[in-house]
Amino acid sequence: MSADCYLIGIGGSGSKCIDNYTYMCASGLGPDDLWMGIVDQDQPNGNVAKAKKNITNYQNLYKKFRSEGQNNILSNSNLFKTNIRSKKNDMDWAPIDETTIPNLKELFEYNILNDDLKHLMECLYHSEKDLNLSLKEGFRGRPSIGTAAMIARMQEDAPFWLNIFDALDSVSQGKEIRIFLISSVFGGTGASGFPSIARLIRSILKNKGITENVYIGGSLLLPYFSFPKPEDETDRDESALSDAFLQQSRGALNYYYRLFKKEKVFDELYLTGWDPLIQLNYFDSGGTGQNNPPLMPELYSCLSASEFFTKEKIDTDDENSVYYTSRNSESEFNWADIPSLNNNKNEVKNLIGQFTRTAVSFKYDWFDTLTKLWKSEKGTSWYSSLIKSYTDLNSSNTQDLIVEINNYFENYLLWISSVINHSKSSVNDKLDLIETNQFSTFNEETLKTGVELIAKRSGSKNIQQLIANSNSNSADKIFEIMSEYKKPKELSGIGVFVNALYDACITKEGN
Image (tube, rainbow, N blue to C red; front, side, top):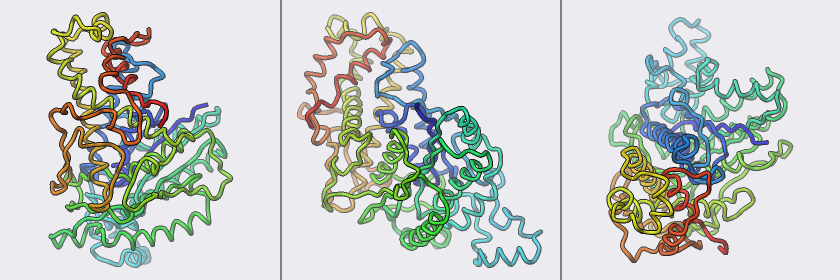
């Protein structure tokens, strides 16, 4: 029996993980079916917008490859495997209505409280700045403010929460529900929302009399990056500063420890950090300017979610179900340091490797041919095997779809290159996973991104060396396989070509 899976990213790091997890789904590392959502008060945050756009782009391709009936790939293929059910109007939730955006005083209607409650608020939030802090761009690393706002607004019947609460009613019919939360321990929204949301779900389960078949997992990101202090004095006063991350984390973890000793909150908990901290070279207090690069610890949290979603059974009686990250060497990080999945130590490397080769080959070896040069290829064997009887490359709809596929692969290559190049803790740190210089350049002095895709790959770039410690077909062998491809009945349209390319880029046994 497959479970209904729900993934919630909370706060800035959580929204980045939602963006990252979409690529996990594209490469076959997600569950078959999934709803994803973001909880963040800082709705204009660049990372939130990026994650939502990535989900939409993924869903458009999933529909065309798997449900449209015109460009289908194999139903059992790992390529774009996950059906992401999130809808545009229900995939994100801000605790405070963005049309009003009060400060903390206004949120709790301080002026009409009685004297005792006013005194309580002044004790809890002794700083006048805290009471009057605008919440427009999140909770600025202040979990106490975030918790107050979360608890005050969580019970509303927002479409975001109805997705999960309505699903709980199906448990009585034998359905299994798995819910996974991801947040940082050092932020405002994440640190406050992580336990609050899980406890709310537990409370609803208790009220409904549900005692089985609902499992809650979570991944906490410990401090894993730092950034320069802002030059503006106002930003320094109101923003989350990386110097305080360790202190805030210590306090939050102490609170979590006492809370989790007292009550069952998570069935499984994963902890992820990075030492030494990854140095980012810029600061943004929030809003559209906050668009941080993806980093390796976030990928760990994503794989934690996949492990939780796809494992055969979750042991609720195991009180020691807490997992943490480690690496074998301080100066090198390789595939052996990546967590296993489905009891297969090579699962992650194999699937990310296959998807990366497919993306590189499509963009650099085939895209120009499919869009510009195909008329001169009509007599070739690959054209006869994959195109001639199945799709019309002269069709604008087909050409638009080819461009859409290429754009998604480009975004993926930019993402994986950013993960690897930005995640080095020092100049001597080596991340031996993917030869990103085969398709991108990296300039660490360039703010925020630093990554650009190269225009063309030279003949010296060997796709067999693209993935470290991995065996695959050569470019010539890929071409040969595609030229002799025998189309399964299920395939149609440009899906024939895409499926053939993906199969030819498989990671071979013997790693």
